[in-house]
Length: 288
Image 1 (tube, rainbow, N blue to C red):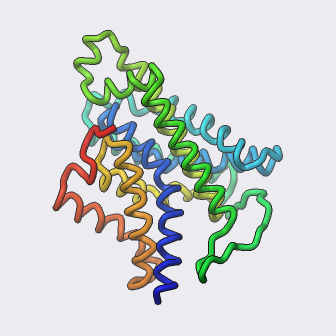
Image 2 (tube, rainbow, N blue to C red; image 1 turned 120 degrees about the vertical axis):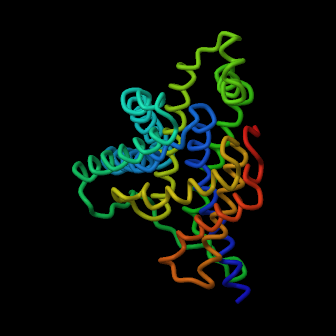
């Protein structure tokens, strides 16, 4: 029993680390643009398939293929935000969120038309799992975690030290004051749409490297991503990381008492508990 719990804890940490990447993208978009962009689901899928094309079709190793996944998903995110979601924002966050859900359905069907419904896997070397005191851990899992941590570290450094990152934080903290200081909120919004959806694409590919991909790759994880952002505190980037780890571990441990089919309900439960006990999330809003 203890060995099973330990294995699930390890699996949860791995899953949570990978979920943290798209969760950061989701919460960053919410912090600046002030609406929950559920189109992140389709952009996870787009990034996963962009990385697949780079890796399988052109023979690019998995790590560099992540950069292509970021670029393609980011460009799609920028274009769809500019021409589809931005015109909706004056009508309110709810209207824009509904438009984002509709956009997700459209983009997922575009992916389905282009690639079909079959499961696809990346071209990866096959290694035996490592075993430590009865706990299994795959080399690919460790590599995926290292890539996810590297992406998150690069983002934190970008936000902390770059001029663009500081302007993004300023708009997220106080849009009115940022406008008075001469910061172009529209430009910052475009940058956030590109970076946020690019991170979604990276997250989609990382999750695909751990399993396989199909046109519903993003749809299957969007609830967990949303739960991670809410649990950590919408608008808080460190909170998204903490929330992702909490949700990842909770989903895995839930397998001790429920069937795998119902593990997605853990995300709903986590949201309900956190909103009841701490409505602003574990780290609160706008904590950087």
